[in-house]
Length: 229
Image (cartoon, rainbow, N blue to C red; front, side):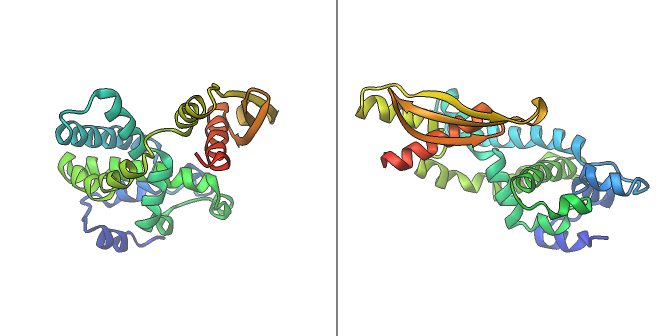
């Protein structure tokens, strides 16, 4: 069994209900192999933590940037609470060492692990909220998530690649990019797409993903690199 007291020391938090902390790290795959574990998986905590995280970030942005319109703050918030950022923060906090996963899932270190880490970050916030209330969550989120904002603003990471590529293409080439599926495979519940981004007849770049939106974003990101825009 994992020694969660090490994590408590690292994060400088002390849970009253230790089961809540364990539950935050319990993936559903672990319970398939350990049906008598006695603690539920972390999915309900993730649902709660997602809402707490969004509220804390929203409140911070609302108070700190009174002159900014709602649309801009929405983009900033989305860039702070996306899976990529949350999984990186979770890794930095060494959440990986405490995950309770099935043997099969524990071998998977790619994109699937990133999603598990991001979800676990949210479930941890949910467990902290139930154990100690909103204020400690707010403090934890400000320390670990909101501190990412200056780098996001400086690099304009809150602007998605599709929007940026469209702006650059219209300004520099007078053309609006078009996205076309060049290949797709897999069953309905696990589709995979390769999408090309075109400027008129020129295929600038391709991207792939498990949704059309993800593949388009990857194609636009690659196109910005290729065009050096």
